[in-house]
Image 1 (tube, rainbow, N blue to C red):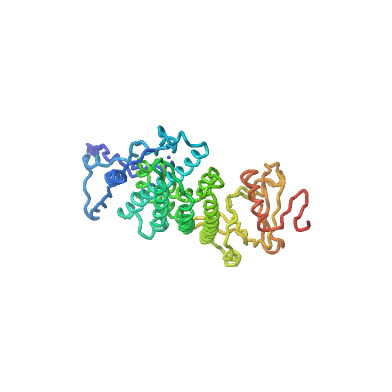
Image 2 (cartoon, rainbow, N blue to C red):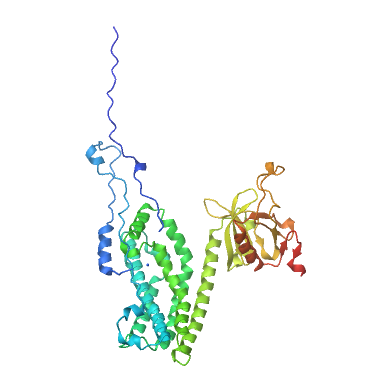
Length: 447
């Protein structure tokens, strides 16, 4: 007699929720009536409630699985879309519709008031944006312990210095408003105000570092979730955080155009005309200084990310460089992806690595740099194995090498397209005279 085989009865697997099912969503990329900041802040508090850390059970005791407990676990759902907060796009004429003063004005006077009003309204808008960035992004991230104060200082830069500058111009223009709705005598106010824009020098120079840290922090699910929720909220107008931050820089570099628009509609005999010209001259100098500092900061940032394999690659020209002329991705004749950094004193070819751009072969100082503009079809694409076959030929190719081949190896590089190659050649021409057009055998040194 055989004993019956006793088998355990199968139970239904109630644990249907896995870690992979908890999808936090993808990082989506995304101008208008205004709402009270207090209202927006209140809605944000309700939207962003900090989650408490869960208590861990001891290793010797495990809670049994229960259906009721599992019902509490649900995948993350993106908040339902809410209407974006849109700003009014009224012009000065719209605001003055029905007024008796407009009918007696010349077309040039109307255009002048339109230009002044555009400058004024833009200041009101940028003040609102900066307040939102400070209170609803930066301060909230600090309160929720998403970032340290030092990290937020790097991401947002000296944003506290910008707000008083824009508030000041808005108040200055408002004080020049007459009873008939026009703004007069704005030239002196703008001239006195322009020097305050020097605060943008540090703000713009910090952006390359702030953007890099923000991108790094987005890998934190909590920060990514916070930023996406804010972007889906009405106060952001569907702009991401960097779109709002970079909007301040965009406003800064737009001032010459705005002031020129006012000057264009200002009669030559008007007292504002010479004052606006002086303001433009000062503004150009400030923007040039900011541009120089931003370039140096960008250069310093990319130099700090270079990864060296050998000490011989640390040529002094890299440290001495202050300007990054151009950088971008190219491919070699084997199809491998490379990145070229052209500083004003050295060309550095890198390849991707987990630590950062890894210096590939020996950097080429511009004093020893030769650039060859190769014709299409001259170079074959592929490995050595396919070199003798009817392989595909490359287009938009250039070669960088040393004047003396004993100093290091050359690089044959393919640009993405004809326009890309042209940009590279123009950048090379700015730093070296050793440009060779292969096929025509033209060396600029021999001209």
